[in-house]
Image (cartoon, rainbow, N blue to C red; front, side):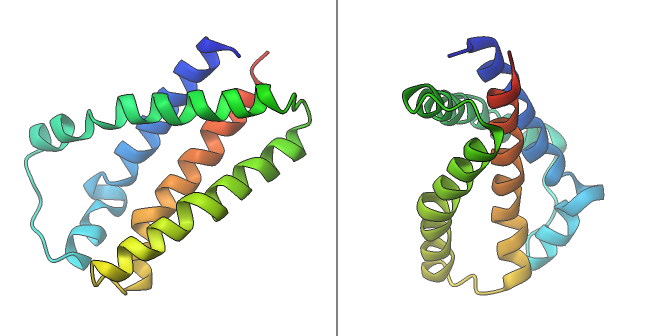
Length: 130
């Protein structure tokens, strides 16, 4: 397992999520959908720091799965990423949205689409890094 690849993938994961919710990208739309006003950027940055250790854990586990399965084919690695996301993350996301009363599909795509994009990107970095 390449620790440097995991660190870089985690940084990319963090950046994707951070900029996804930036006001000029999807942040303002998201705030309108959840009926909340924009928070100060300092608070956003401080609150988003929790993503650093969680992305490290997720990318470490993904790298470990790739190593455990001795995967070296990018297509197979993408299939594994899609299976993990579709079979483990997506069902939890759907249940969480339902129980929180958030049935707006556009809101769901914003809140969980970011994890799909970040998970694919970080998985590709881990799998393609020499």
